[in-house]
Length: 125
Image 1 (tube, one colour):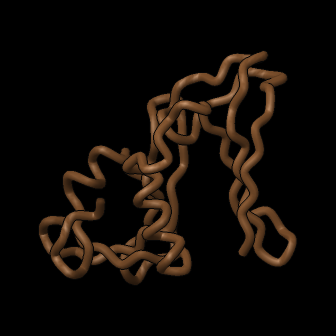
Image 2 (cartoon, rainbow, N blue to C red):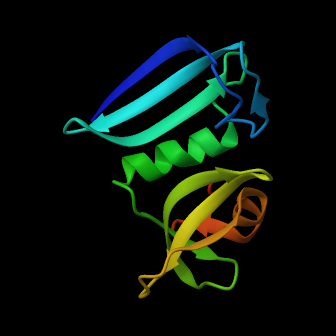
């Protein structure tokens, strides 16, 4: 996998992949593209002042290190696979699937870090 980050000037309004707020047209932003065998697997845009170590980024890095399949569990012990993070107009969303399931499910990032923990018992982030 390779990662490229470039500074660009926004031609349109975009949603910041870090904080979930609008990147206004005409302002500079960071354009992050991750390629795997020449194919784009992630494309994010960030405000140039957003911290790189935001909690969604920390969780994304953990998912990436787990090859896209981070084992976790809800507080009741139900095991899940966390497979990604998406952003909507309300902020970051954790994409997961049940332990034996194949259907992709989603929960808000705040709910995920409040209800889930790693299989080692430690917090997700």
